[in-house]
Length: 231
Ligand SMILES: [Zn+2]
Image (cartoon, rainbow, N blue to C red; front, side, top):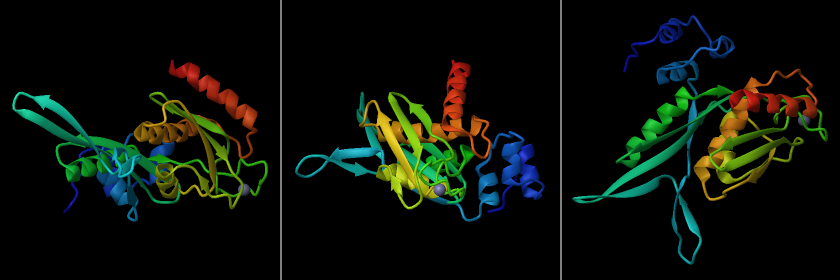
C-alpha cells in the first residue's frame, strides 16, 4: 500500500530529505507510524507479556495480553490490552500500549503507538569495572518511574549479559543494549508499569547532557534537576 504522508515531517521523510538522527536532533515529533517504517526498514517488534492467569499448580502464567471484564446490562464485556516494543536492535526503540475488543487489534494498535513513541538509545560504557569505551551498556546509572514502580538501571561490564527480567530483556535486545543490571522498587506485579519505568529511564537519559565520560555523580545531580523541572 502506498503511503500518502499527512504531516510536513512525513512529506520530508517520503522525499528522503531527513534522517532519523536529524528528526531527533531537531526535536521533531513523529505523528505517522509510516515515518518509522520508512526510516527503519528492518524494524522488529516483540510483545511484552502484561497478562496473567492462574497457572496449573499455583503461580501465575504470563500471557501476552491482559483481559479485563466489565459488567454491562446485557452481560459481561471483555476488552484486551496489549503492550508492544519495537526497535532496530541498534540504538532506537519504542514502546506502546493499546486496548481493543480483539487481541489482534490491540496488538496492531500497540505496535503503531510504539512507533510513535520511538526514541534514540544512549549507549556507552559507564561501568567502572570495564571502561572499554564501546556502546554495549548505558553510559551512566539512571532511574525511571511509572505508577508505583521505580527502577534503577546500572551500567554492567562486557559479558555480564542482561540481568533483568524477561520482558526487559525483550526491550533491551530491540534497543541494542547487551549488558545491564537493574534494581526495582515498589509494586512488583505490574509488568506494564515495570516496562514503562525502564522506558522512562531511557527517556530521562536523553535529557541528560552527557560528555563522553560523565562521572556518575554528575549524572545523579542532573537527574535531580530534571525531577524538579517535571514538578
Ligand atoms: Zn565496557
